Length: 231
Image (cartoon, rainbow, N blue to C red):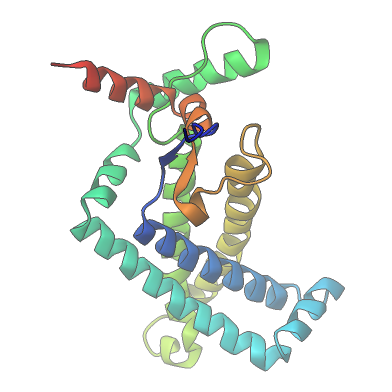
């Protein structure tokens, strides 16, 4: 008799979502690295990065290639939202609702004091929703400002110099914000937090442990169980 799986899993991401996520992550990482290397080119660590990229010329083309890839990832995501029922369902679940704030407060109380009940988050926690919308807004700002900066001379024929300077500031500061939200907060929340360490495998396999999923998304699991019990 085959032994029961000691750690049953549940699906978290489809193949298309994993491809979309990987392309987005790769392009954003390359954009942030190459962008910050230029912004802080007089620092030793930035000079090392620029050297790895093949000098300033290599950094220039890597940044542009990653920008094109980011636009491609955006169109892939948009296609999923238009044609995939899974994407549409997840988008609905990513909208903030009143319960998010109630459960977030419950979670903070439970985690800090040990009192009360654990939070009953839905398919996405409030911070996962914030990360999604924050990254989406950040990428839009990066793409739009990047288009203006792609050819400054051509942009000067359409916009005043003050506007282009503003786009430069937005582009640089948004890259730093994305670094904080994506590289630091998102990676900690998804991979390094208790229950996930050393890595949540969903971004590779599409699946995660059922017990971890239940603990982190108890509200969705209980709602699904109630539906299954209905005649």
